[in-house]
Image (cartoon, rainbow, N blue to C red; front, side, top):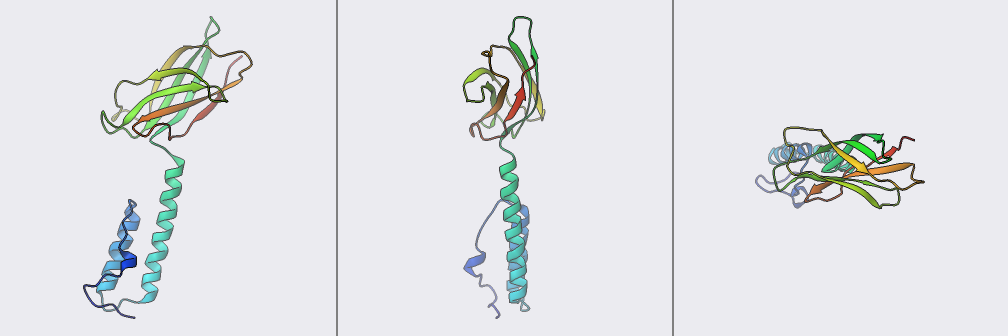
Amino acid sequence: MRQKRGRTPRILKFRLDSDRVAECYDIAMLYIRDSRFTIARFRHCVEIALVAITLSSAAASWAGEADVVAAKVRRAADGSYDFDVTVKSNDRGWDYFADAFEVLTPAGKVLGTRVLLHPHETEQPFTRELYGVKIPQGIERVVIRARHKPKGYDGKTLTIELPK
């Protein structure tokens, strides 16, 4: 089955963000324009594209725009807790950056918020503190999450045990 030169089958007219998928698309276009185009070569390109799509989807599910990657917690003398939280975010300027992180109970009640006032494009990952978080008795662990402007809470959270 040969294709006429200059004619692109509709099945190959797709666009994805993955560089590998785009590269496969370019190779497929070369094969189609080449008189030696075969179904086997086309299948090979489709298989590569499907693998690339699967890998890019998996990578997207592993990380968000603002992930909490580490945290340290200390109990202060007054019974409150101090947190050092490390966030890795995809900051791209004032309209696209990690703008806060929160400490929550496992049930989702917000116990403390640290607002981040500027992007950290050249400092990744970065660590910031949150002092004086009052945690109700009976809570043994907390969840920390980061917020991204404009994506919201789409990243990895971290659950951490509280010191006694």
